[in-house]
Image (cartoon, rainbow, N blue to C red):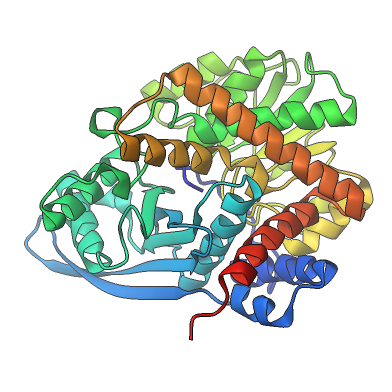
Length: 429
């Protein structure tokens, strides 16, 4: 997602519903059909350009050697260098990484930044590893995919369970091989190493921007509108804090330990302070304890799923009472649930638009690295606002012109942009 997110424990969706690549392809196929996409371009866009599977031997602190499996998928680079995060998690699979790389392709196209899509991951339990072990894992993984990395070819970023420190190790490893400092090889770096101001908050800030635009489109007021946020990590907590500051009432929040519900509103600053001292929300007394599943179905105006994928399924979609869903996470809604939500009249701002703030400011960071001139934070935030509002309006107009929902419109617009470049470039033979 181009930003770390907070995992949650949820019930599994029905069998066959949660394969991330198949879910992405269902939406791709639908959009391609509506576009009458050229058959040859369709075949190209249905396949990733490159999939790397690599073994990563690491010397652990106890002297033993562990071998981890890592992936890096470059889905499409027709519009520019591949862009996409790296996640460290036991649930990483090649299907998941490929789907996320495809989503990054459409995400970059929908906000019209000159990147293609990529994603990476390592199967590991980072919270059970020491800092030294994580550094050795990161550096060996970087070395194993070195041939595809580079400011002009593939630019990673943080994702689930990775952060600016991991990006610093990647940048240093790459730079040591190149024999000079290459800041633009990753984004989401520490500011002291060429990271961008405003980058850490960018995904959550993007969610805030699209929520405001969705409320405007639906004719709903900002002040007092009730929002529930699933996932209180970097994305959800920032979105909740910024929307509260805009006058919205945050009635529910959650993380992997469960959720809190207060119909009169939760003080987000108090929740953030609690997490600073206790790491998780468990034990926070700002409301009644609820499960992550309950949070999705509570009475609210806006629901922002900002955790992991496949939390809104055909099992619970019919019970959702929110009028607007802003997908801060990647793939929180299954393809089967889409039809149910549309029938209910729920206005869904899809993930490839709603959480594109992170990759947009990653693009800004890459630009700043390459020109060697760094922007003020207010400049970053204002340019992010301009990009997100323009993209929202373009998707909305596409939706109205083609009489489709926002997700289908976002896919149609992004696929159309990628296909147009393929037609112009032709096939190298």
